[in-house]
Image (tube, rainbow, N blue to C red):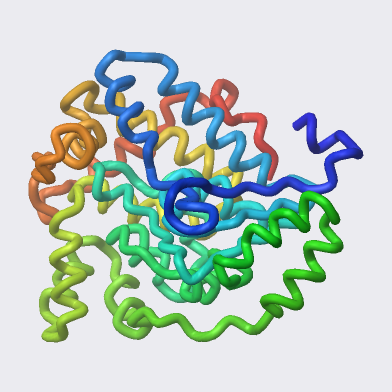
Length: 325
């Protein structure tokens, strides 16, 4: 907020770091261990975390200054939130040949939050449903085709681009970027567009899975098998989130998702939480054998899903009530 009103700050840029590549991975989901510990301890910091994260997502969405995200390496979960929303202002999302982008939350009993209902819901065709439900990754070129990134850049050029932005400002940076990676019309994505649209437009998760399992091709079988590994309950919640979010603005999406994430940890608290169990299996015990409840996609009822979408707060007390459209 202070940078927004400071005339000396001409642009904001974010990047990852690490041992892989010039900049390293952008975001690899390290915060989920905190979710597990805080949920079991009843730590109120968990509530503050999500409120502040979603406020930041919205701030980026309306930020008036150039906002540049250098999306090298892995970009998952919360990293999508602090990079994907810059487009509404003067945002620019740079991806590379190393970029692997995904929203894999259904694999940990969560849903694609940080505004996922907004940006995934606006992907072409039914790609958003496919990415949200499966959690599968796409590369940098496909991220551009999906509308989730803006420019494909050789990763070796990132340090020079970063330094130029810092020393020469936004105009010098833009000139270098245009010379190194001219803007082009997005090519068609490499995903199975017709098959995705045919299956993922169906009205329910059981219908989607049944269509995939009835198909004889390898892609359909692999996709169905992946969905069978995800949280059945959160697959249903995620599909409803995407279908609602497609017609909502970001502020409305974030308010909806803030209620959803509270339900994830409090509707069935402690170890009974689907999210706590999913994180346990993936990141704590690492047995990769989550005990989902219900265990089968076909056993999830409409009432189970509807409970997630009942706001825990009246409108006047919602923690994100102040967000504008």
